[in-house]
Amino acid sequence: MKSRNLIPVAALALLTVGGAVLAAEPEPTTLKAIMAGMRVEMSRIHEALWTEDFDTMSTAARAVADHPHVSAEERTRIQGLLGPDFGGFVAADKAVHDAAVRLSEAAAANDMDKSLKELDAVQTGCVACHTDYRERLLPAKTSP
Ligand code: HEC
Image (tube, rainbow, N blue to C red; front, side, top):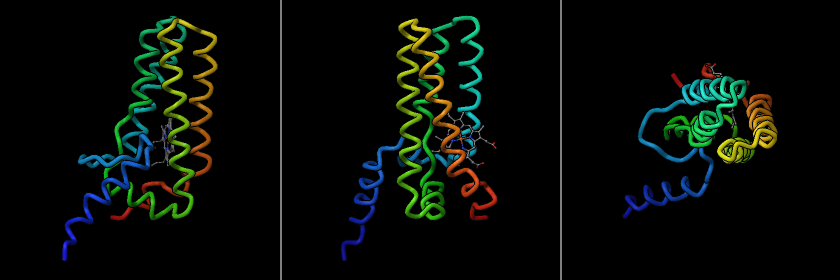
C-alpha cells in the first residue's frame, strides 16, 4: 500500500489554491499573527502618505502583499470552520493581495492619485473579509 504518495499530492493541491495567506509553510503561523503584521504595515503606509514617502509606501504595500502564510494546522482549522465558504475566503485574500501589489507599483511610480485609489481598494478588501469571516474565525474557535 503506497500511502506515502498521499502527502505530495496533498501538498500539490494546497499549492494550487493560490491564496497568499493559504500556501503551506512549516512555521506555526496563525491568522492572528499575520493580521497583527499587516496592521503595522498599514500604519506605515498611512504615516508615509502624509510625508509623501513613496518608497516606504511601496515597501510596506509589498509587505502586505507578501505577508507570511498560515501554518498547515491553521489552514485546516480555517477550512474546517468555513466549509463551503472557504473559496470565498481565499478570494478575499487574493483581492487584498492584488490591490496591495497595485498600490506598491503606484507608489513606486510616485503616483499619488493611483496610490490613494489602490489604498482604498486594499482597505476595502481588509474590511470586507472581516465583515464576512472574522466572527467565524476568532481564536476562541481554535482547537485547544
Ligand atoms: C481573507 C480574509 C482577511 C483579509 C483579507 C484580512 N483579514 Fe484581518 N482578520 C481576518 C480574520 C478572520 C481575523 C480574526 C482572526 C483572529 O482574531 O484570530 C482578522 C483580524 C484582524 C486584526 C485583529 C487581530 C487581533 O489581534 O485581534 C487586524 C488588526 C487585522 N485583521 C488587520 C487586517 C488588515 C490591515 C488587512 C488588510 C491589509 C486584513 N486584516 C485583511 C481576516 C482577514
